[in-house]
Image 1 (cartoon, chains in turn red, orange):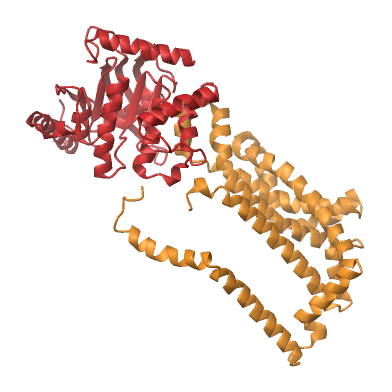
Image 2: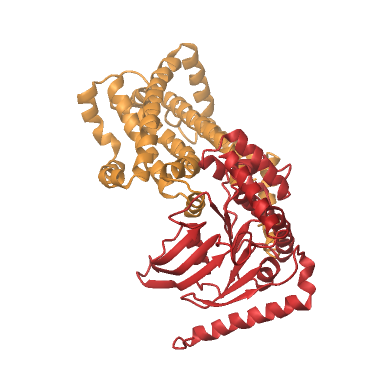
Length: 293
Length: 274
């Protein structure tokens, strides 16, 4: 198990180098994640009403790419992420990771939820080892890897503290560490900074940038913070109002490695207002249900 | 999490520590003990001033003197040991059977559907109604009494553990599932640790019920135990002796409660009540 993880990291470094110093894989490569014509319809447990959350969404993500989905709240973007995580069953369409169909949750994907949702009876260290323990990694090995990742997210020295003693931002760091330590093929971020105050959020965005530079993970994020989407992503996908469809995909050509200061550039603001307009457009469309593309 | 509502926090800060400071300085304890002493003094004075008849109402000094006498001639120990034996055996059997039964009832819906009518019936019925049956089945000795204590204590344990299993945080289950946990792993890593506070509450409630069972069973029949002594002393107008027994049972109940509360404090670290 451990050796597999290490090999995977090495492979990734090699492929990253082959692609020219950390740029995401070229369009010719087979996609890491391939979602084809995905639809999700579920029944509201309270009302029994059938809700069409996602309609016919296709999306490919290349290895090492950071893709963010933005859209109005309640538009179905979180449902899309849950479907990729294997927590929600699609009613139509396919999800493939490395060409293999996704059937339920698996150790090749790790989710960072909006709420940190740590296990309050586990220390920080043992929260981080959780996923590894489930997958049968020996505890000593799991602890060694957890210590490394805790160092990376800036939580060295907090290993034996219980989550209740940590601030919201620190809890969310643990949440990230818990996902990163599993060395997933695909990292899924579900509005990971939405519950944090503005300053903590910016600090965390900056750290996510540097963690991403270090690990070169393939990331699918969902957010409704447009600036966050532009700052972090290689590509931003704008969803329509429910049922979610892809309204537009926007490449973010800002240079890597990026820092929080990228937010000051005029390029950044252009991209932001472009996305803002698209979302606004989808909001208007929501009020006119008969409007078709 | 702490700094999200800066406008609200100061208000809470201002109110909460007052209570805490009281407790930390032992003022709370002082108030509790002080009021109790005041009541005891009033009781003693009422007797001394002949406002009440001490032969019926007794008084703290008479209770103390009687208690000392009973301790000296070994009467107290004989009855305490008899009751203690029934309590320990019945209580431990109730824990040993009730915890797994409650967990099974809460975790497996088939078990719940099959057994919940029986549990509901047993919970609704006063357990003392079963005592004649227990005496017929297990005899007048230890058996029937232990059976009553067991039945009194086991139901709250079963119900609490069942609640624990049914109240597992769905968000944490979602996290476990996202990390690939199967049902057994969810049980072991989420449901079981989350049930610990419920277990402590269950043990606390069961203590009270078991003590009730002990006294009732001994009042019902037999020739020793605190319940028997209460009944006998009451029938022979030995009010002082009744009070000694009542005080002993109350003291034991409080001691058990404190023990379990301090056990639950160990979990405060993760509950974040600090």
